[in-house]
Length: 278
Image 1 (cartoon, rainbow, N blue to C red):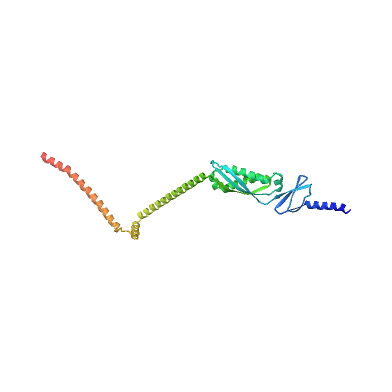
Image 2 (cartoon, rainbow, N blue to C red):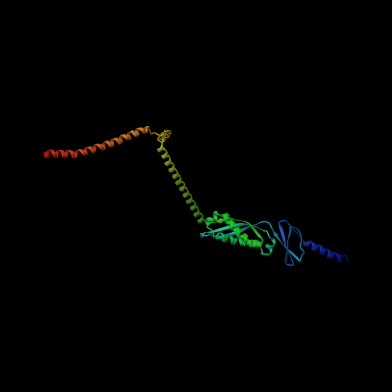
């Protein structure tokens, strides 16, 4: 008699033990009743009746996925190898289980194809200098397509862009040429500014004669500070002006004398002819 009651009790205890499931805070359980979707349960204690109900667990934490290295041909026909890292999480466990067979594998394949297609539309310079823009473009495309699977893509980061040795040398030469160009432009701009300042200084000295005299004295002071054997004799500017006036007067008097000698020649000739005729 006792055995007849003990067997059902043991079976009931085993059934209850098999029905009890405990899910942590970061997991959810998608429960199916006779193969049909019933509900999303968790976290905590969950009762799943064996043979009638089934449950698949889904992790809600952020998943870090390493996108394998991809061979990409850029828009300017340069072959590079690019790899990236993808951060995503499940926001709708029901869609993640029902709408796709394996959401992790599907997201990985989608990330690889999107990485190749997006980078193939850009030049090599854009890949190296505009990574933030490319990351945002890839993230938006993957997030839009995985939304139907109940997945939210948080971020995509391009890790490495590997180039051939010949391309690295070419980029180095290009960078060196760019630095030389900038140096020449800066030097030319400096010469232009210096010329403008010299013109401004010349105009200032032209307006005030004392400024030129002060500059003259400053130059002599600078020369005296150097250990040189040069002997400088200061000469006032007024003396130079006097010599200049004397030269102008001498030139004017010389021109007047030559003009008077040329005027006497015809008069003398005429007087001689008149005497001989008389």
